[in-house]
Image 1 (tube, helix red, strand yellow):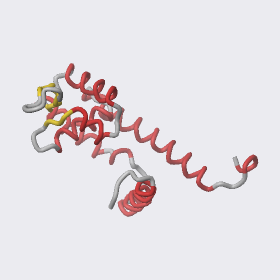
Image 2 (cartoon, one colour; image 1 turned 90 degrees about the horizontal axis):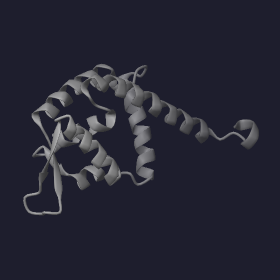
Image 3 (cartoon, helix red, strand yellow; image 1 turned 90 degrees about the vertical axis):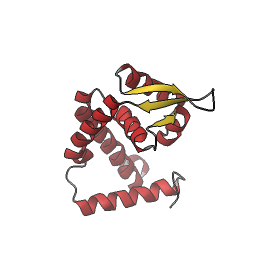
Length: 150
């Protein structure tokens, strides 16, 4: 890269970020696989667990997970087939379907959480201070892109 287009420090950084993302996703996927999960399905279960009633409209799940509606549908389909989530009608809006975590889903989420926590979500090689610094640096990039405020 340097020989063709010159020194661009951001190229090295983005390459490292993208490769680290691939490594971390592979590690987390491997750890949650024995629970019948992928990281995307695990995230969906965590999101439902965080909701006050254990259920959310699928549209809201997509917004919060930053996924397209078809991806949310696929995730919920798989979780439902495995008994971890069930679809229920919204109490007041017939056009809305809720995804609700089941007891099986809660148990799997708990076991998977223990597993990913044990491997520190794949962030091996960093001290707690370095992990905090990494989070701060990436938050700056995300804020500049309008990903969140604060």
